[in-house]
Amino acid sequence: MVHGPCRGKMCDFWARVKLRKKSLDVLVQDALESIKFCEGQSPKVLDDVIKEYWNHFGVKNVSRLCEEEPDLYDKMKLVEQQVRSRLI
Image 1 (spheres, rainbow, N blue to C red):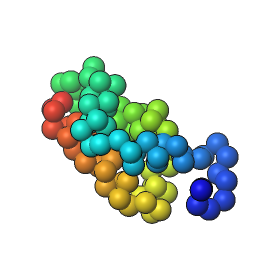
Image 2: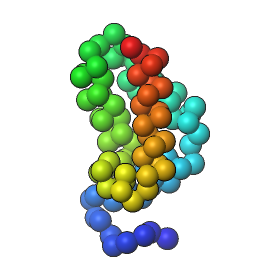
Image 3: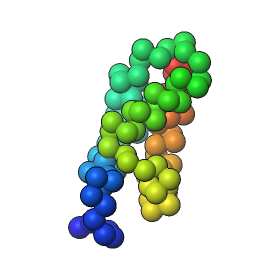
């Protein structure tokens, strides 16, 4: 079921499953609800909050996810673009 060795505390298997199953629209809506207080903030603050959102979502290492599952990484980036366009 899990590809590769166990990563212990760095395991993000279930975050990847959620990311795969949720539609882009649902992910964007969830992200907007989580970070709506950043409306009108500087892009730097928004970047930090988006990183925190993915961490809370369960993604432990974005660069590893990018290498192992680029399609999920692309989906994350689409979510981020849509969130930015609605908040800025």
